[in-house]
Amino acid sequence: MSIHTLSKIFNRKCSLLESIFVFILAISLTFITIRLFYYSSLSILLVIEYLALIGIITILIFLAYYDIRYMEVQGNVSFALLAFLLILNFLLYTFLGSDGVISIGDNWQYSPYQNFISTITLGAIFLLIFLLSRKKGLGDGDIRMSIVIGLLIGFQNILLWSYITVFSALLYGLILVFKKRKIKGLKIPFVPFMVLGCITIILLSL
Image (cartoon, rainbow, N blue to C red):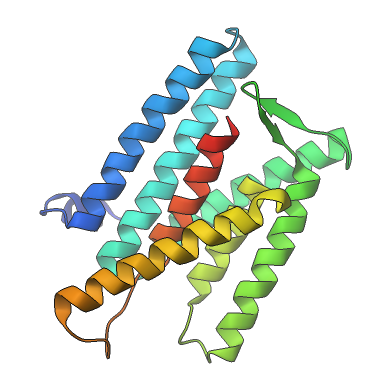
C-alpha cells in the first residue's frame, strides 16, 4: 500500500460508520491501558502483551475502515496480520502443547489449541457461504478475515462473536435501507462488523 493511497484515505471527511470505528479505537486503547496497567503487576511480559494488543486492534480498525471506504479487504495488511497470528499460535502450541495457555491480564486465557479449532470452524463456514453464494455473499478477503478472527477469539467465543457480528450488520443494513429507501443494489461491508465482534470479545476477556 502506497503513501498516496494512505493520503487518499485520511484526507477526506469521515462517514458516520467510520467515525464510530475511530471512536471504538480510542475507547478500546484507553480500556486496555487501564485494565492491564492499573489492575495488573507491571512486568516485561505485560508490556509485550499490551503492545501486541494495541497493534492488533489498531490494524483491525484500519481494516474495518478500509473496507468501509473501498468495499474490499486490504490485502497486504490483512495477509501480514494473518501470518503473524498463525506463526504466534503455532509457536505457542509447539512449546505449550494442546493444554497450554497464555494469561493476558487477569482473566483472558489465550489458547492456541482453541484458536486453531475456531479458525477451522469459521474458515469452513465462510468458505461454504462463499461457494454457495457463488462469490456474491462474501469475498475471499472475508474468508481471510474469518481466519484472523478465529486465531484471536478461540472456539469458546464463536457463538457470542457471531451474535454481535450478525445483529450489528443487520441493524446497520436496516438503517441503510431506511435512509436510502431501497434494498436492491445496496452493498454492506462485512469486515467492520466482524472487527466489532472481535474487539468486543477481547475487551470482555481482559
